[in-house]
Length: 123
Image 1: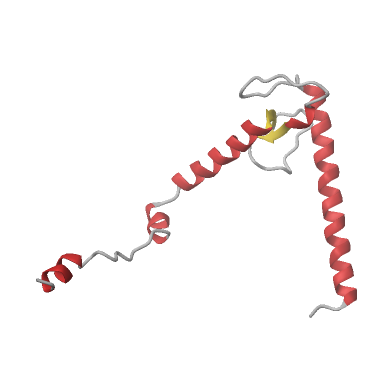
Image 2: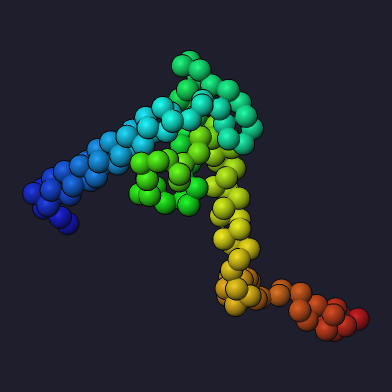
């Protein structure tokens, strides 16, 4: 079991990492909102100050640390389109897997493989 000192140190490190991440996100979000019109890049829904929290910054290359100052890796997407973009990205990653990868992740047991033989024995 970790000591209180090591737990406290780990808690401080995690808290600092969370603060740093929040600051980075706030920074590029603010920049993107100043650069681009408040419109979802997919569904073209328009946003205003009341619903702006539903407009997100999407990283086109899916790397949240790639934040060029010209905003070329960003696009504004509503929550729904942003979720769909990430779902589509995961689906395409899965589909791009090799046949060996898919074979390795596929169940190989067939409980009905010898069903015909079992049923013949019951006659």
